[in-house]
Image 1 (cartoon, rainbow, N blue to C red):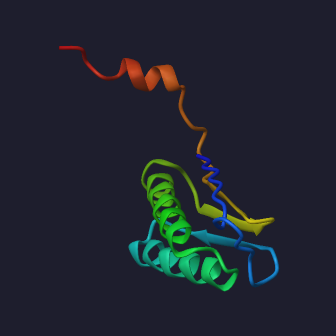
Image 2 (image 1 turned 180 degrees about the vertical axis):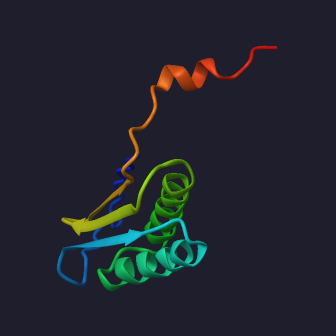
Image 3 (image 1 turned 60 degrees about the vertical axis):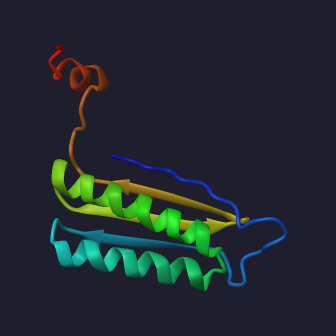
Length: 110
């Protein structure tokens, strides 16, 4: 599973810290998933990302990581990168994934 999210700093805002990338490896443990929210929030704030964008990214990353831990295979890797006023995130697991049309077919029709 991969999620890539972009969000600007807002009009005229520039990151106060240098660009960089944070990579976190975690399992399905609830405590690790909880700490991911704190780590993500801290990392983004340290790079001057606006509060609104930070809140959106924290939620999106957490939801994607929970889904990867619950439905994927192996450890979950989360990467967050801040560069040029944008935030890019990737959440991956080691599972093979699924065919999108197979998921739609699994839902019975009334």
